[in-house]
Image 1: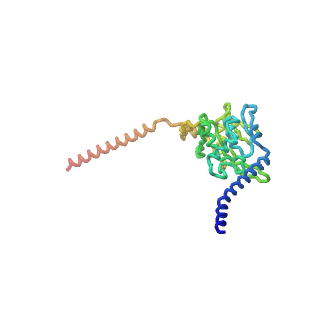
Image 2: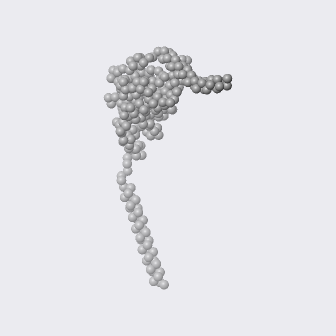
Image 3: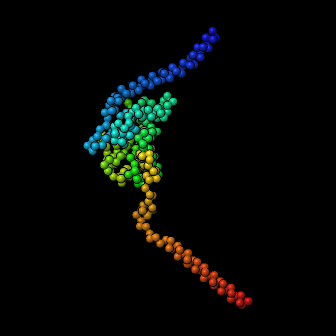
Length: 278
């Protein structure tokens, strides 16, 4: 009887975790299916999303929490650049042993984190460089970048709830004008030229919980991305003084040396006279 009891306990100890995992996976799958039906968006509607408007600009609009996917496709101006399956595969490759993947939404809605975004860009030969907000955006050489991706606060409505989430948006130069390609916008919004973009980025920097990433080629020399730091007189419009500082200093030093020699001569002459008197 004791042998049977031990056998049952051993069997339960082996099977119970597998049963729990299997049940959780089944529940998770059912939950995903429910969410898909609730939001009324399937993959066919996702594939149909995005079109080129009057300015020939490709602009994907928001589906679920796939803002990272939309930002990437809007940045590359290509609806086939990435899809949900590619980003999900990246999530799995980043955390292959996790039952609940930490890089995306538990419900399968998207909500991809920065690690997924950076890995996706690397597949295309690009990198996302975090912009240090202590710098001024005017120091960026915008001719060296593919575009920008911003992470900003956003509000999401889910049933009667309002959830505070983070939202990915793309900013790209098209035909000499920078555009905000936020997937939550009805249409792309023109920001303007470089000076307008600098003002826009300064506003973003002043906001709370906002991050800016510069999308650059992997082979780019990082030092070439930054313009030369402006001097104080360039920053405030003060004309630079004539280059006479060194002459002034040398003249002053020469005078000091001359005076010193004169004093030495006088001192020597006085000492000589004193010695003669002795």
